[in-house]
Amino acid sequence: MSNKTMTKEEYLNKVKEIDTTKEAPKVLEDTDFLTIAKERRSVRQYDPDYKIERKEIEELLETATLAPSSSNLQSWRFLVIDEQEEKERLLPIANNQQQIVDASAVIAVLGDKKAYKNADQIYSQIAEKGNMPEDVKDMYVNSIFDNYGNFPEERLAKIAHIDGGIVAMQLMLAAKAKGYDTVPMGGYDEEQFLKAFNVPEEYTSVMLISLGKGVKAGFQKTRLPLENVVKWNRYE
Image (cartoon, rainbow, N blue to C red; front, side):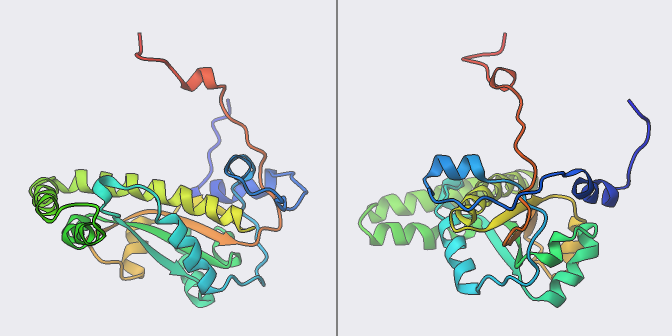
């Protein structure tokens, strides 16, 4: 193994040089879940002239937020960056990854560490629909405040990251079902991003997702054999 290393920016952009894929992203005629899951790829090359309307992005986000979350607190938050000037401002923060400026939008998936404060609003809606008695609703809300309100910040951040990962995957699958492509990104300066875009201090940054019309399919999937990652019942 060579001892040569790359900078983070070189590492994140090198993939385009070694990707020998020539085909465009597959246009799917069948959008059942298994097909979508198998055909989704991380796409890094986009048509910079293609614009996804905000209404359609909102529809994708609405589908994404049908995902489950810890105690149904829906701690995910989204900053949608679709103005070119703002994408250009994000570019150096994200190690100059070209998809930042070429994709129709970059969706920053954030997590609200204080999401439990919305418990009464959320569970009141459940009660109003007749799915929970009012007294049970009150007990749920009180319990959430007692528990989450006493969790250390590290645990609240972990919960927000788990919820954020779930909703991000649902967003990417929804995008593929609609004929769009995505790539999740963790290669950016989180602290600088939070500051540059005035993100509230109670939010944690989970990931960035480029969303747009891909022009190159991206790598074919290679995965470890299932026996390498699955055990049954217990580890010996």
